[in-house]
Image 1 (spheres, one colour):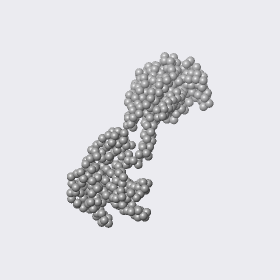
Image 2 (cartoon, rainbow, N blue to C red):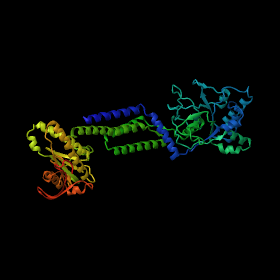
Image 3 (spheres, rainbow, N blue to C red):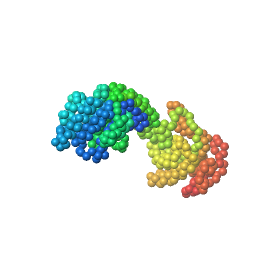
Image 4 (cartoon, rainbow, N blue to C red):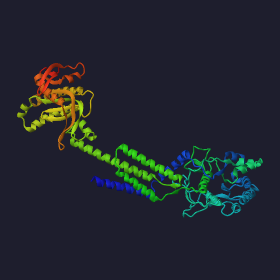
Length: 589
């Protein structure tokens, strides 16, 4: 039954894991893990790029330096394009949306200045202008003469697909609802540089963070006759012009690309364009591996259901599996591949951890069953050893230092002659109910009942530093119990009882005695024989409790014991004994 249940659970885990992988249910977690990999790689394994991008930024200082509003910066943009024509960059991208109409009526000559700059740039280097859409989702037009001056293929949308969490991780020119490709700013710049862009995930782990050259500084260098410095800065470089203002054109990215703003992941859009173009030019957009590979990996992780083990083993195995999956996925990222591993990781946890939980539940159920069935047959300490798997079932035992207690009821044989079997059982059960509770409370292990007698071991299975003390305390509690028990007997019209208790301590073999088919947990050795004989001396000695000298020497100072000297016991050399609680003394000595 258990085997079929295990198989059903395994098939459920396998099916859930493969279905989750096929439906890409763990994609949000995979993307978060990818973000973490990007940041770790940037911090611990930076990878430079052969071809980098120079960013010219419109910052707050530029906005203060140039007096007109940005909409009327035609003359400054024209001047920048003229400066670039002299510097001869590899290509220039303008990540600023140019006006959709003429402003000559407001600022005469501004349109002409920008047109001259665009025409000069077109002849000197590849130029791409940014396009965008309006709030309704329709393309926002640019003043037609500017587009015409830039030429065919010189404009592209500065747009990216955005993931469900609002983060940009992908480059794909299929931006329409019908997945038709449209020209993009980064894509058109790549084409101008002779590289056909594909689609993929942007590798944010490649390249360093971006700095920028303020636009007004580049303009000032030209005004001051230091164009040669501009030429050294921009010659044969790919240049991106865009805003780096705090609250304009910001994008949420997995990493911070701005060297001047390391605490936030809200990044200027021009840096996103630059990072994407970095990837396209270096041919390292990250490609997803076939989903069948992730499904196969998930199926392999589900097989961990069949690897049962201890808690420590399960933790170690899962830790190793997580480490291997994370290291493998991170290594694939460096090679330009994306493998979603959170699905396989969760399947591994569910399979291996679930198997451990399943086995734990079964063990707990079995323990409860054993406890309910056998708790009345063995003492609590022995039951605990059995449930913990510490008590070995093989015949034999181990040497332990113990104190053995023997007790029986005086005159029991004569008393039982006039009682029915059921009355005898009821009588003994009433007496043993409280007596056994007192023994267990003192830490004793009831080994066996012998009619009206009881054998108890202190110091096994749980070792005690001085088992004589709790054994003596349990014996005294039993004597007090007899007094209370007799009060009940008198109320029932029954004759009172008396008991005798013998105590001796020493080495004994503790373990299973009997046959492999039926055996008892008991104590074997001279200590057991002597304790039994001392219990038999109680009536002769005149004390209800008789213990050996060894026990007396290990009791607290001041214990009221009577020294009785050496006494002969059957089948043994005389033993020096002590008495406690004289018979007929009306209580304890």
